[in-house]
Image 1 (tube, rainbow, N blue to C red):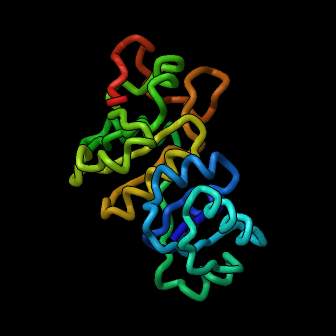
Image 2 (image 1 turned 180 degrees about the vertical axis):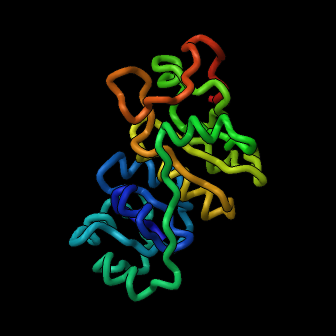
Length: 203
């Protein structure tokens, strides 16, 4: 199942096991990162954009779409027993959680260049989204996970991938995180110095 709606809509209620790859983003690149080329796909798209999403998938080689759900609201209502919300937390909530007795593991899915240019949360694991499908075995299964990127799309994709693979306590950082006083979404995040640690990506 590919849920191509906005991350906030997906968080409000999505079909369990669905991968959230927003249509209004770098859809082709991100779909190619997290979808298996041999998988049969069902699409849940924004209203009246089902055929567009199916066409865009076909253009990058994902031509095994077996169907789509025409009306997101009606589809979710009719399948309500299979619908779950997704956890999204604010930067202030994250700061409090990191200071608690059972702090979450923060997973930074940005690129190396973004981390080096903009700084990063000092305790975060760094696994770029492009590498996450092959590196989920590096993540703990006994602690909460919080995914973050710069704007909120990649972290929602990453969080949905982990849920699909059986991770139970997964959230993503609402609105992404960009350090600096002009970025309210990152207010309160414990950002480290840009040069405090080398990029940990394998690429």
